[in-house]
Amino acid sequence: MQNSQIYKTISFNERITVIEEEGVRMFVLKGSKGALLVDTGYGGGDIKHIAHSIAKQDFKVIITHPDMDHIGGVGPFGQVYMHPSDFAQFRCKCSKKDIKVMPVYENDIFDLGDMKWEIIEIPGHTCGSIALLDRENRILISGDSVQEGPIYMFGEYRSLEAQILSLKKLDKMKDAFDVILPCHNMLPVKTDILPILIEGAEKLWRGELLGKPVDLGWTQTTRYDYKFVSFYY
Ligand SMILES: [Zn+2]
Image (cartoon, rainbow, N blue to C red; front, side, top):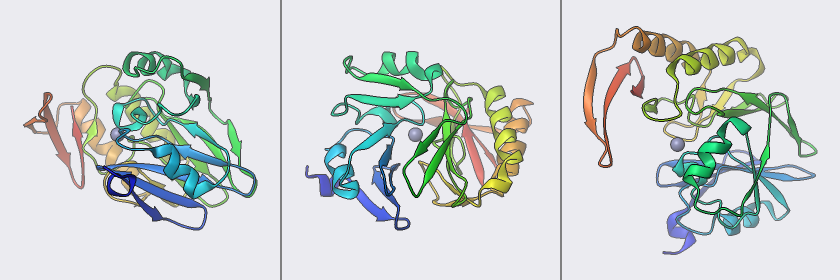
């Protein structure tokens, strides 16, 4: 299949391009002095070619978290950035052993010239999940941790307790951003999703939500809905 059939590109604004592949989103962030590709999708096509055609400059690749819908396309890249708490999960899941992983930490800044992206640690969905914040333009890229869902909270490497703490951390920071760009479902979402996710996750943790069994094809789990958000847990 050709790249144009696999990937759909959407210009969010003059500096941010959204790339969609089968329900997951990547972002090309193009500044005056550099570019970032956030996540690599399933790897169904040549994501490097698509990203280069958008940015036309050298870019760094940053991974919000190493689930397969975010790291499937890392193959053509020699090096990727992610939080070190996710290194082990990345090595378990990624068959390309020659890819160099570089660490990012809280408050690290990727300076792209006229645009700066700051790393925010939000463990929970995975041990090293991160968000990226552009304080000047008031935009947060949230990976899978903030979205309408279902947010995957079952299985290895996940912690509902840590997820609740991370959601509360973002809620306290919400004066710094107006727009949230998640990797799945509705785009964009507003900051009013944060208190709903916190309430829902806390109710889930206390066992107060009624679940429905779900067959995902590759595994069985339970879906919990709360207002307009939902979780698999
Ligand atoms: Zn995902």
